[in-house]
Image (cartoon, rainbow, N blue to C red; front, side, top):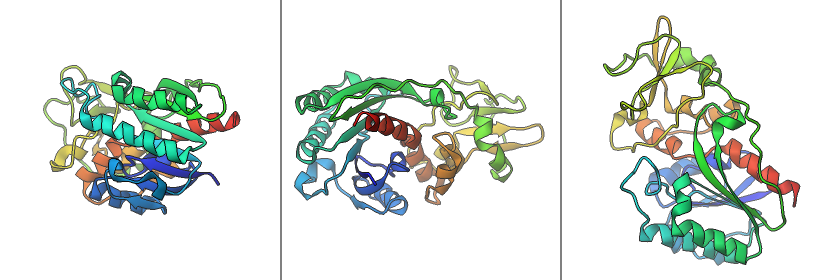
Length: 297
């Protein structure tokens, strides 16, 4: 069984189905506690810069999902910080010592414009890794969410890049069996009232206020923070005789297969649950990328 280590782990959403989780690094104590509920490996509740690489168990694959907050298009005033660079250098230090067979980095597309990205990419090349960087969208892999992300994946032996199968799945298929169990709600004044559609709630504005038909993937699920209790309420489903709020657990169905989504532990506080879901990476894409690298190794 392949052994996995993760950096900037979050709740470890990306790690499901990859192998045995040996260790994770997550500085936020509340989120680290959620990781512990989902994975058996140890979780180091600290900043990655403070971790001594030699103390980490050797693993076959390392997954890194550093913060995207300053590189996201949702933050037009964001720019690279000292923290971004120090995290990138800490990732490189761990790679230098652990030399895993495989490495995957996930972030928003804008992260490629950061020096932090180049620090990691260049060092992998220096170490002799075969490196591929692709912008991929979950919806192209039959996952019920339009979510564009950058993936840098690297292995010690050459491999070919992933070719998206372009197998689209609508939001309705992902959640239709649990709609009746979702909480009832009422629409806000700005929401469009069109039956048999999904509509955005939190994060809605003039440019994105539209309905999503049953055959369409959901819009990008985001993290709006845990400070406001209403931040979990990102979407509503409008039926012919009901209006249902899409819960954080239902949103997990928009990241991968139903069985895995339903098995993930989430905290009772919806705002915190939605934060870790919105910041999560799809386990399905990680499985695809890792399998692609393993073919050539």
